[in-house]
Amino acid sequence: MFIVHVFVHVKPDQIDSFTNASLENARNSIQEQGVARFDVIQQQDDPSRFVLVEVYKTPQDPARHKETAHYQKWRDTVADMMAEPRSSIKYTNIFPAENEWD
Image (cartoon, rainbow, N blue to C red; front, side, top):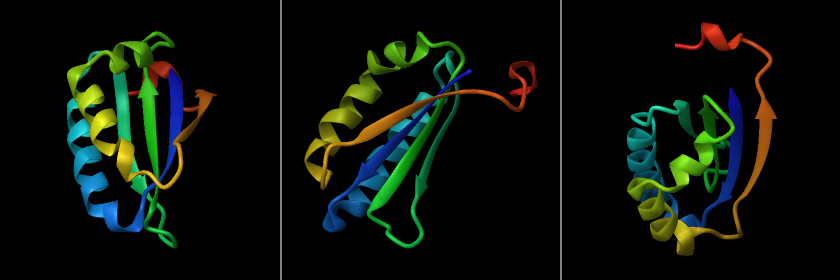
């Protein structure tokens, strides 16, 4: 598994719009063959901060994801909603074992 956490700080007046766009993207993303999970989480003490937890089956799958129409729509839609550029950190899966993922 190849895991990416995308950190997003949204302008306070754009939280609802960002959430709606991100949920649409996530619902489409989990239909992709190379996506094992795609979570949208919101920080409790600062609702303008989100993390997208993206779990891909191979290191090549994030690039395939970025070629999809739903990702490109999300990227273009949320670009002006961000208070600062988004950032990401890439991780390697330790547990559960890859064959234990649904």
